[in-house]
Image 1 (tube, protein in one colour):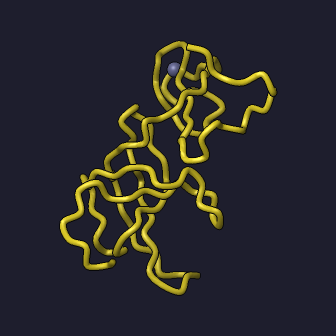
Image 2 (cartoon, rainbow, N blue to C red; image 1 turned 180 degrees about the vertical axis):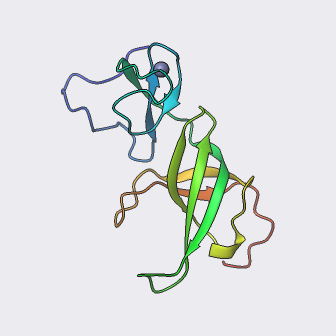
Image 3 (cartoon, rainbow, N blue to C red; image 1 turned 60 degrees about the horizontal axis):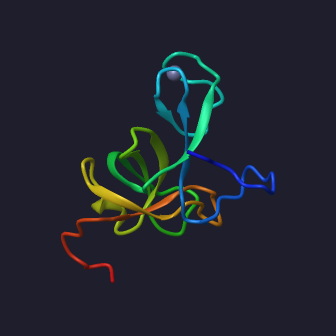
Length: 126
Ligand SMILES: [Zn+2]
């Protein structure tokens, strides 16, 4: 697979809403924003693009420094890596095991990925 472009700009993905991650060339582990593989310590990391779907592994509600309660979640993507980001919807309504899809790769304020719930039990917040 060919990754990259002729412009030489490493951090310019073709689609702004695509999450990129690294896969270890030694043990094939997937990781996010690492310099070394956390599994084998290898530095032969290739950049790949995620399909953007994942599962919430841990969800926290943060009330500090924000006008409203904010959800902070750890999301495990289908490719096997975990990112810290935000899930849209009621802050208290996000639970471990919820399936989510990437909405925005980089929140304009915090630079975090933002996800939306795939299986919405109700639409009370709309
Ligand atoms: Zn590795």
